[in-house]
Image 1 (spheres, rainbow, N blue to C red):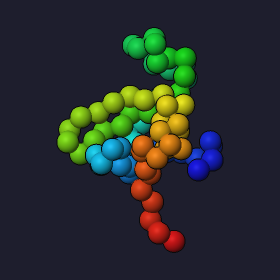
Image 2: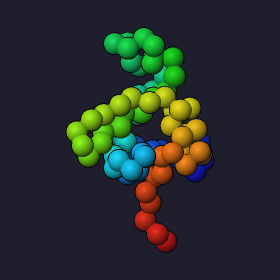
Image 3: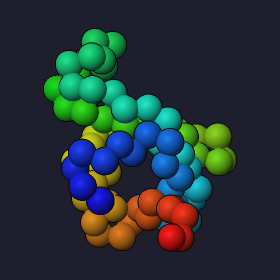
Image 4: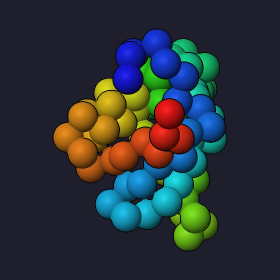
Length: 75
């Protein structure tokens, strides 16, 4: 997956929990949470009702290490 590929709307498995990437929060646009404001982050909602905000670097690292799997249709 290239760095420029949009992840919004992608289904995923995170340690067996199903979720969807709901929103991309661009760097410099999240004034309510200054600790996250300096980097691009993603909002993930899980099927069990929980959610998290994860930095782009963390998300991509977890995908690379196989902790999170992006679910895509077979071609």
